[in-house]
Length: 297
Image (cartoon, rainbow, N blue to C red):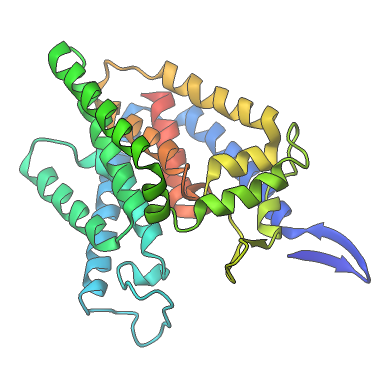
């Protein structure tokens, strides 16, 4: 999408849009990190949980036939879960990021967690389910970090799961990837055109990515980490990584109130490996809230 005068390309509007979004994110982050306190984040938790439950409830109603948008919307996706977005995966992404906020022992949170998990199962989004599982695993590591027997059992179990995944990597990629690997191979050739400094924010959306043998066109790499590498180059990706590592190191691991933000933040980073949460406004805002919470708490 470009703004042109005559036969001259003037502005790549995808790049302009991405630059505006980045500026707004940085400016908002400066304000939030300057003024928000711990009590504010504790209050925001309630809205995160309420929003997740409301979204999940509406999506489930649509899934089972009570679609309030049915007469005014046309859907391309056969799975009506989250039909108001016509993409059950995005709804599932949001629910997966909300899971850490329901990891409490009281009955209200347990019921909420069960509803969210049921919603995830109806979304058919395997990647979101995996991300939610990673969040639960990280929660267990934090909760049992003082118990070496349980901690090593968890790590050993994760190692076995990783070994199993490695032995069956071709099947997993073909079953869960939805042509992502082939798409990444195509995008890799684009990355090599300017690997050090990148090709600019938003540039990927201006490309028509074609996978040989498949008629579909992709306007996203379905991997935000890879897109950061393409857009900002190796130098930009390293700087982005430094910000992430600094936030993780700064987090106060003794403050249990911040665990849900911290776990959701790590879940967001995992989600980025096979999805595009930074390009979807609600998911991007969720990730920013997690980051702000980690930096403050």
